[in-house]
Image 1 (cartoon, helix red, strand yellow):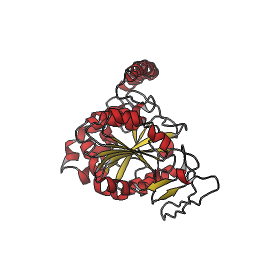
Image 2 (tube, helix red, strand yellow):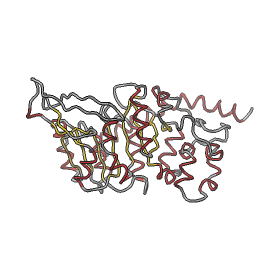
Image 3 (spheres, one colour):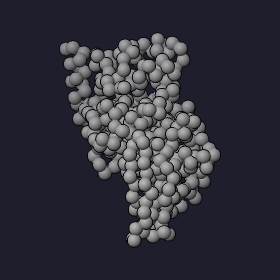
Amino acid sequence: ASPDSDCDALSAPLKYALPVVVAALLSEIGSTLRNGLCNKPMSELSFNAIVHGLFNEPGAIRSGDVLDVGARDGSWSCMYACQQPERTVRAVDPSRKLVRTLGSCMKAHRNLRTYVAAVSNASGVLHGKTEGGVGFDMSIQIGDIQQRSAARTDNSNPAHDVAVRTIDSLVEEWNSPLGFAHLDLEGMEALAVLGMRSTLARDRPVFSMELAAHHPAAETLLRLVQSLSYTSYVVQEQCGMRFDCRNVINFPNEHLHNLLDSPTLDLAARYSVIAFVNASNIKKFSRLQPKTVGNAWLCSNKWFCINRFANSVPAELVAQHGPPGLLNERQMVGSFLRAGQKLPGFD
């Protein structure tokens, strides 16, 4: 039998056995988490594992604060505070009621700070209807931003007004560099990114965001991120109520060559949990792609292919930002870097 046929024969049972193994592991993981290991949320396990792994790799996420925007009940903020006790973790959410739920976590983790604010591309006020939430009226046009201040309505309550801040203004007020940020703003992520351009240009943090892969706004958001000299990777798991909700992790272009040997990203890439994404191919990820052992997106010979994160890093970025001769030293990493090709859909 040919190597390819042997490989296919081996991959088929593994493909169907893998979910069973994962289910068994999840049961064990759930027991561990209930025992209080940083109180990891029981959803978005792949995304959380990747971020945690990067935190533990020297230099993968630069020094600086951790920012959780749209913190909700603070599950992720509390996890970050536990995982990264040497960093200040800042949780931002417009709901006072939700922010108050973080009180017990703040007692356990003195590096956690909370802020009641909404985040956008410009400062302002949201006129709140209730303590638990806010109602607001904005007119937005991406590119040439036009924003209309909210007009107070009869059912709004001045006591529940919430300040709207840009991330740039918050970071300037904190007077501390930003190392990592996560944005979960229910479709308003593009405005948040527009309001953090100065921080991104100065601190060059790794940052993640949620998006709806099938929605046209996802393409706009990814074009904006790419224009800021970042390269994006989608995590192939559902991240919210929508089936096409995905977490996307964005790395500074000049930092990618430092991650070519990342064990965390290698493992994620090898099992197709993470993939290069941009405005041209995001809709492909509105459905979860097959996860099979030995998945060979970028290799001409499945038998000899080892799927690695390095295979998905555009060669021109390695040549531009990496040490001289790095591409020549890495001839073994796969056909993508050997051929010096761009990924399909990479603009």
